[in-house]
Image (tube, rainbow, N blue to C red; front, side):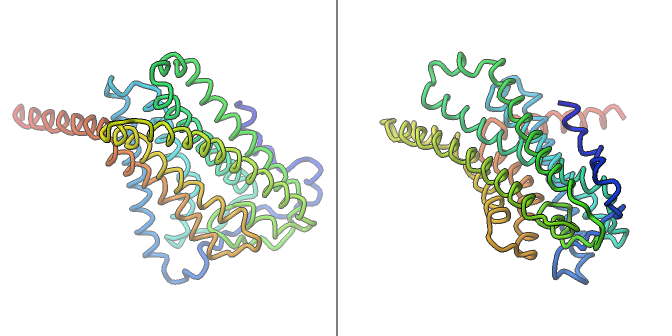
Length: 330
């Protein structure tokens, strides 16, 4: 796994070294936003800070409360970690050039950014599918839930998600940076991604574009079908519950997760499967997916989950008591 994660650092391959003249790329940023850099800096600094704080609080709530040490919250804690790492691949560099500093990114830095963007994004997509399966077992097979979702199975599912993400990112990064890049070097985007990098290649990039679209589309389709299959069974099971209270309780355990899934998969379909790339549309959709969605996830799960809210209230209560105690001592 470690060698897989480090593979982009070895790019470009040896058969490219005699052809590639570029040592860096220039990120042009978000299209049609010239003169708005200061406003965007303030907005996205706030969003990024709120994303880190919100997901850190959820993670803290899960770790500190023994009642939340269940498979559902184990997966939610991992989702919070991914939602902190995912925007961290893009936001720091984006905030740097919003502040008027250098827009350049090194060749290897571009490859690493692309790799971790797809690695973390694909892993998060797989984790959504795993979380859906967990809800399917909890609602459709409640008596066997602890047997099916035992710790070894949960860890195995998470390892599989990380492995799929690593494999997906390795394929996409390899095919993208096997091509020679000898100029121009201006990336019409706010980060290094396949649709923005491939047009800069000095060779025919149609095959690499086809591989990228097929790979991303296939993984997204498989995950979406697995999620739809699980939620179809969940929906049928909920409709069979006789009491309205029981149906409401079962639905409430899935509503936050389903909302987060729609926010995650919608942008993927728009950006990678559209017939003709649109730079402005791509930038707006990916900003939603890369910066706003991770922030919304923390709000969705904290506001719609009673257990998480109760744990957070206990944490804040203990912090206030500790603070008051310290003041009395002083």
